[in-house]
Image (tube, rainbow, N blue to C red; front, side, top):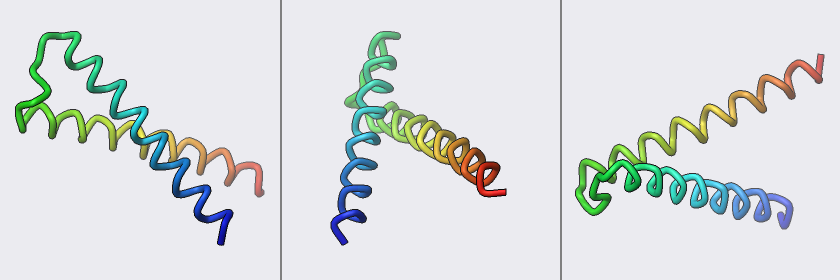
Length: 66
């Protein structure tokens, strides 16, 4: 139970950090992140990065399991 909680909290913290970095990058290009469409783009990019990293790790784990 505690192990599952640690996984969820660490995943949420990682998602927050990725979202923060993406928002900083978007603001660096001069976009206003308070607009709903820019915020939705930030969320979309964050999800793509997170699921991309998860699929890479899943592929590595699958190769090691064989």
